[in-house]
Image 1 (cartoon, one colour):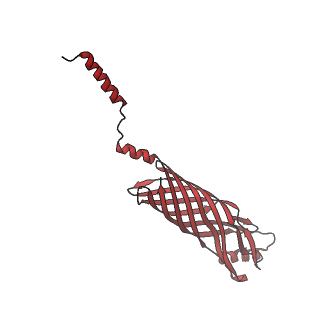
Image 2: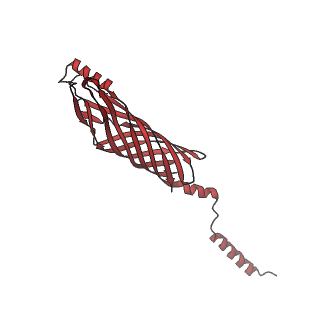
Image 3: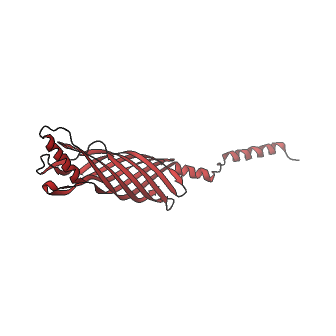
Length: 236
């Protein structure tokens, strides 16, 4: 005959051991935990087409209306779009489907010029190293991720001198871009998973200066660019 006291003790010991055992973790729970916060480091290279636009006032104290029109026409027909090599050293921090992206970016603003009336030609290049701050959201399609981003970048210029036709149309005048300048950025990043850690990226990107980049005398210039960056990203 079983002793009721011994049976009671055995049940107590078994229940205690069961409570102290860790609960099994389901595979889906492990995957969600790993994806909750994730870091990314990457390198991207590319090229952008730069589009320049300028403003000329309707009235200038030192010029007649005909001289002002000649100056405006000389700039309109003498300045052309150019291109820029781009470099992006990037860091991303994922929170679920949201990603905060920063890093260092190199890109240029500027234009080509060929003023036939004074036989002058060349290219203005304003080179900036910028710190971006972008917010994006991820859409996943198997091994492919699509991440729209929007944000700003603040840049430091290390090549700021440019040449423009003189308002009197008898030579060139020197103008300087802003030493510190901001830009609006919008991009759509496509990521393809090569391994769980390594991804290939392809990113169309649009940039636009925050206001005029150059404001000196009659030279008031704004810029925008459209480009494509490609590279690799490592998740850790």
